[in-house]
Image (cartoon, one colour):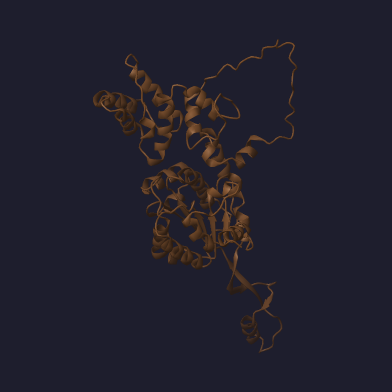
Length: 420
């Protein structure tokens, strides 16, 4: 394990106190750790010892990590807390642009920003003073009028680059978003006093009461109904952070009244397909997603998109895709299985629904090209191809659902694939 390499434990160190401080950092990073688990970790380390450098890492992980999605946070906090002697400067550089360290500026990796904030709680670093007298130095005033607000910045910030506080704020903003949809016109009709069509059957039936004389024409209008929304969310390792936030949005859509959806069905897939629809009916979003995560045992695991879509087409498509359902497919398309099965499953899924919208976080990168075999196999079989990495990208979904011509990005990538 890369996080446990080059581990240095001083002989005269206070190991129990350090483990306690390490547990506090994990708790601030979002892991549910209490005093009992800290005591268990100290006892476990005393029993296991340090015969191998990796023993210490895996012992603490066994004591502090309960769910697959907590592993990446644990790894980052462990690396910064135990191994790197200059972790303070490194963590300062991860909090750019609010704090600038001596490290090269770069975007924080997955869970690094949360790990940095948990370890830097209350820590400040003295910045070097200018050699000139501060009294003689010119005072610079910055007018922030017209600059973007914090909420506006958060709307376009990548989910994977958010801190713990920013993720919590993003979830609150997503809970207020709506995903309205227009009703569908059916072939059936209903009585309407101002309808556009004449109802001959009702008109003739009414004329029988007056000796066969038609004195007033009955009118009718098409009957309207609301479609279903089906969400297929990838929860593999590369998509886990995005999936957690997007499922918060799906929960808000499922419990928001007045948006028009008849039913909202949600499925997660990594190495296997899991139906989590019933859990989203819980009004408490934390309880709902906790239950969904407990049922989906393949969270942060591998990816088998083709096999998962084939299972959905076989077991669930006829139940949930009838009568003009809209499908949201959230995945990065990085599948290592046979692409022929993936292409066939995507084609059948596309033919079974009214509209198939693919949300891919990789589309956020400028100059994105469909080079992966999985993406090339899936792209021809979707109606719209959009990024799903920020609040703003999710807020624009309503346009993709209602606009039949929303396929410009897909057509551009298809031309790139064919070389035309």
